[in-house]
Structures are given as C-alpha cells and as structure tokens.
Image (cartoon, rainbow, N blue to C red; front, side, top):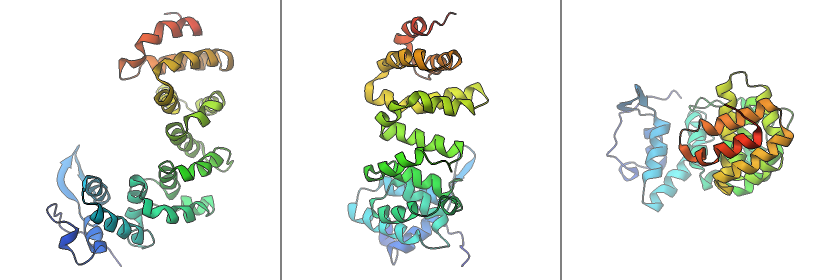
Length: 252
C-alpha cells in the first residue's frame, strides 16, 4: 500500500475516528502547515507531541497500543518505531526486546523517519527502561559497533547509569577523543560523556574528575576537559575553574 498524505486537523481527537489505529495513521500521514525554523512538522513529530500533551490516560493507552500494532506494519513502521522509541512506550517493551535479540546488521537496516536506523531507536528506547540496562552495558564491549554507535551507547548510559561510565570514564574518553578530528567535536564528546556524572554528583565533582584525569589522561585531553567546562553555555562551572587550572597545571 502507498501511503497518502492527509489534511492536518489539530482539532480532531481519537474520539473522532472509527478506531485508535485510524487516528494514529491519520496523524502520521499529515503535516503541520505551520513552519518552524523553515520546516514543516512531520506526522511522527505531531503524534509524539499529541501523545505527550494528552491528559486522558485511557486515550493515551489506546494510542500507544495502536502505535505498537504499527511497529510491524511495513507501511508505517518507518514512523512508528521512532515514535515508540522517543516516547519510551511501556506497551512496546516486548517488541523492542525481540528487536534487541536480532543480529546487529539486521537492526541497522531498519530505516526510520527520524533519520536514524533501528539500532539508534533501540538504544534510545533501552535508555528509558531500567530492565534494558544490562543490554546497554553489554553493547559497550561489542566489537561490531561503529565509533558513532558506541558514542551513542555511552552517551545514553551516562544519563541513566552514570556510575557505569564513571568506572572507566578515562578509557571511554580516550577511545572517543582519538577518533574526533575537530576540537569542537572533542569538547561536545566530553560534555555528553560527563553530563550524567554531574547530574548525579553535582557540578563540584569536576574537581574530582580533574584529579583523576591528571593521573590518567594525556595533557592534551586534560586541557580539553577544562575547555569543555569553561565553554559550557551556562556559568555553572565558573566557581571551579581556578581550582581546575591549578590541578591540571593550565596557564593562561
């Protein structure tokens, strides 16, 4: 079946359709005429937004169940997979569990409307469910991952399991920074990998990390760590910068 675009009807709810799945398909097949940043809002984005803003729990459950049904629909899985992943739908847990048991190359070959493949959607979904943490941890040592894929696994783990990252943060930083060519990419990498650690232990933990990196990382990476904190969009690390300079031996 070839999908056809449908009119954008923001005033209609699931109650205006013959079934929940018809409502979900209608939203996925529509586009918002309101441009944001020069782009139309695609159906999968509209559906995620509508679900997130919905107050009625019964309607949300019906929508979630319809999305899960579309995960196996060849015409709609392109949109349904990233929506279920982004929302972390509890109803989709069994489907993503089955997906996680498939060969890596097969998972990668699933294309989606979020410009990412099935593996990235799986990782994003897994990071929203504690029962998937062993799965995420195991992927860190998977030699079949690309550096980009490993980065995404590590970034997600930093948010949901910062102690796992903290255990070998020196090694992870070294491995990732080695393959980043531009300084701005290196700084972004450091910011992502340490974000979960600071969320759990507070911004002041940067002092402890600096002492650790002083002993375990090359001088170049120590300086990059300092720059990543100094150039943070917010002044949150400003109170610690002088102390970090002393620890890392950084001079202006």
